[in-house]
Image 1 (tube, rainbow, N blue to C red):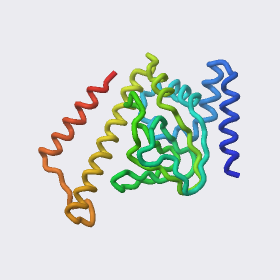
Image 2: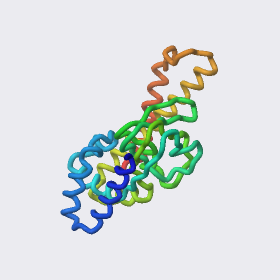
Image 3: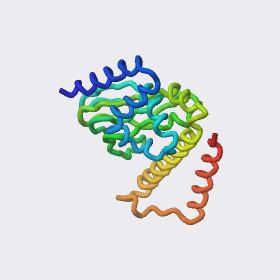
Image 4: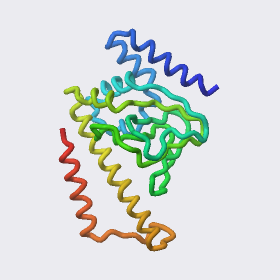
Amino acid sequence: FKTQSLFRARMHQTVLEILSPELRNQIVAFINYKWISKVRLFKQLPPHERGAFMTKVTMAMTAQAYGPSEYIVRLADMMETMYIIKEGVSVKILASGAQKMLMNGDVAGSDITVRTAGFRSNFQLKTITFVITQELDREDLQQILTHPGFRETAKCLRRTAIKRLFSDCFLAYCRLFQSMHGLQTLSGIQMDPAGRKKMHEATGKMLRKHEV
């Protein structure tokens, strides 16, 4: 039965809380390696910080279960949480109407890595199958990232979040352009060299602004 996965996750969390830090790191690595190694957001982290960071993150996460066709996030909800899909399939629906399937290892709400306060969601997250998530609060993540040992990790996560924000904004612009001009697909939309240069410059400026 699907809720066994949720029960196991919460039991693991309870056991970890009573272990010494060194033993906890070893157990966390053993228990969570299979699923957390699939999280694309964490794959690109600096190798020398990744293990300790993922241990801290795992200890701060809470497991939640959702049934099919259930909304995890609705449009304009207050966002204070990052959602990692551990099991199951869900769909992320942007305000523009664009959709993206999220499966094991995918993340929604990574914007919290660059936000200093809660913000309104510009997407909906809806389950397709039974879904188990690992959820991380913004304040918990920010507290972890303030540790001097995770300086490079903080930079990496912020760069990734900013690039994704730009990507979502550009996709929303394309959808609007498509609607205004009656295009059947986005294949006819091209950005002139000057437009591409401005977009790259704006992205670089945002990345430099959020350097730690």
